[in-house]
View 1 (tube, rainbow, N blue to C red):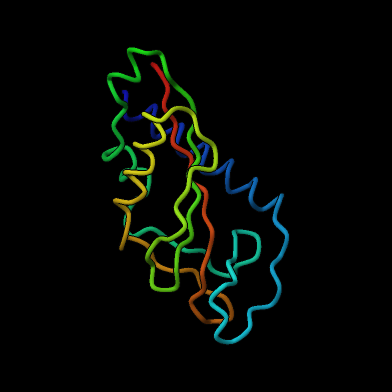
View 2 (cartoon, helix red, strand yellow; view 1 turned 90 degrees about the horizontal axis):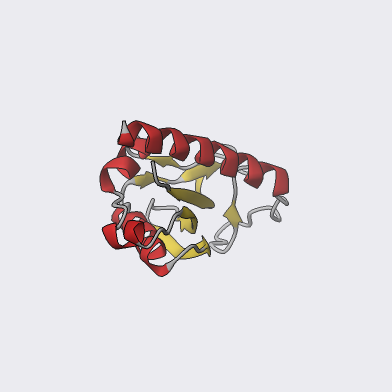
Length: 141
């Protein structure tokens, strides 16, 4: 039951965050050949980056809600922003919306564990860099 509720929240917030990126997106300038600084988002890329496997299962199985944070009554949604590089590696990992250092550090730990598990997005048939915001829901049941 615990994992299914967390799974529902993760799915709901991933969809909500993706919609927010689409609505708030400003298209980047055209990609220049050899330009590695252009970072696309969900609104501007033709084929989005993908996680190798089921992202929700990975998050549910690898995220640990600290007992200390639970005892302190800390809950909320931590948003982690990162760039999926052309080779599928992750860079520029940062907390976009912090809640508390206990929850923030857990979200960062899980994102760092995702290294090597992404396939880059494509634009005009070529792999490109793509930004991604991943929400982590820490909630009492």
